[in-house]
Image (cartoon, rainbow, N blue to C red; front, side):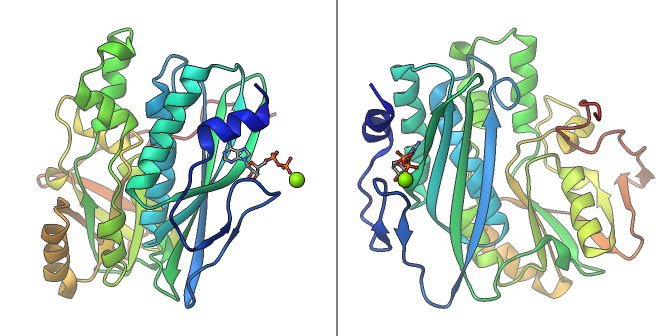
Length: 317
Ligand code: ADP
Ligand code: MG
């Protein structure tokens, strides 16, 4: 089987989408964007041994790869539209490819994303990467840099599920076949907040998705917006199989963190109900330029690492 056959067999799918002028097959894809919209473009890569274990389920790797890109598109308040897929394969394993493409395409289909192209190559290390393009009406994106002093800080969902599942796998000397379904879902099938986010963009000042730890993302918003924040950990809903510090510094929640002014709190409550999306108010933006965390009325010692950093453990050359 050659490269062309792999693409044909596993990744070429008909999408009933009028925006696609040319999909997989030519040198490059051609799409027609909606008029009045801006394009929002993101890419996310997963590397074997770094983002997933060697024996991780291929369906889950495919699903999660798409979901992690969707999470970035949601954080911008955009609608996901078109994806390209870059694959570096270290073996030609047909059952792996079949499961991987199933996971990826099922997640794509749920959110009306069309796979319109990519690149397939071989190499020493399994490496999978998606570029996802979304659309948003002119000037409607949510940025990290527009949090305002006195904004309230909210988070969607429950924090720490993926960190807890990862703990479980490491403790159990992991056999993925034995992974309880809740742990599997937490690690490999993160929810997408797209529908909620598309309406949230009308009222939020700033937003970011939580990929590297809640605390890290609060710091990122504060840095980008040149503000500070106070967090109340008692209000953070977290998976209590791990402790709160692990929950706010563990990665891969793919939830949204956002800020909005007092006067829009009722509106966001309505959105939360409409989309059946749990939200929790966990703090407030201030002008201090630092992040302080409270448990009850005590200031909590600041964790050494606020989140995951790929280069923390790699020495400089
Ligand atoms: P070229 O050699 O001109 O770059 P390729 O032979 O690499 O073209 O790709 C042929 C077609 O298949 C292109 O439309 C490309 O976007 C698509 N393609 C390649 N790999 C993938 C993949 N993993 N998933 C989806 N489409 C792919
Ligand atoms: Mg070409």
